[in-house]
Length: 390
Ligand code: F0G
Image (cartoon, rainbow, N blue to C red; front, side):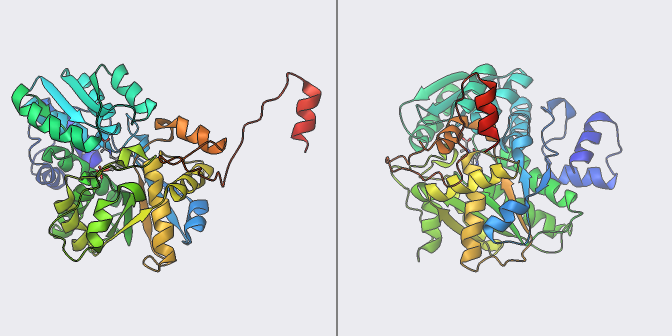
């Protein structure tokens, strides 16, 4: 699909050519090439991770690493489509509320398209890597003294008043673009669906996009089976997990003060929960939650595979381990976990973990189970040789 998309942009293939027709059905609003905004997102790799598989109790585990995207997260697929829609509408300014990755991605795509990006982020609660991206790509950056949920409510009202185009995950065009992650995944697997697709859950836009992609591919007979979606939340920000366990699923009870070191998913009132609920049920999926300790250790295991990811992404491996232990996922299951963000998004977290300084938001020490302590050594060949021969 990605390949066809590229062909469509670089050549004049006839529209009735079957693949192109399919693409046009899949992202129907992108009917004018002049509106396409791209930084060559997509084509992210599938990475076999035997060590992580063993850690989770699986025979085999494959990561689809969205951290290989131009701004280092899964947001780029959707942002390409969202920015294109902003161009279609002739908007000049685009805005988003973000825990960091959306703002980095939006800033880059807006800059590429010649739009002015405005980002609203929770002051003190996004990683420096992501904040740095927004600044470097030229976004007007407002650090609001509130959490993600509060800022989203504020900005939804403000966007209308100021005539700014809002590129949050509630924007349906971004969801359409995000579907391509799974189309690409199936294409890479020769359209053989896995048993499970595992992803972290925050605002739940990605869960709704993945579910929609699966339903459409199934309806069009591109795949012959629906993989099951497993959504993993951080324990301190797990309203969707609570909803799934509740007898009354007609209302989500927001978490007032969500807390997790996986700041990307520090969200207590996920806007896309109704769609995500429908998709998880449609795929006979599962929702689980994991502790700060479990995220930290799973993250170190993904790092030890030579792969690495940011904390929110590591919730996938922690969640698989839990679902495996609970017998929900079987040992021989064919599992793909989507790593949503690049390792370098949050180096501070990594340094603290490996040096035994990581603490939960409430100040409880996190055990550095798989610590890899750096050593300070004198400028002395003999001493260094002695140390390395131990
Ligand atoms: N993983 C990462 C690295 C994220 O940045 C996010 C969300 C998620 C997972 C969760 O995805 O919200 O679709 O359920 N980040 C958003 C942002 C909220 O503003 O960057 P979701």
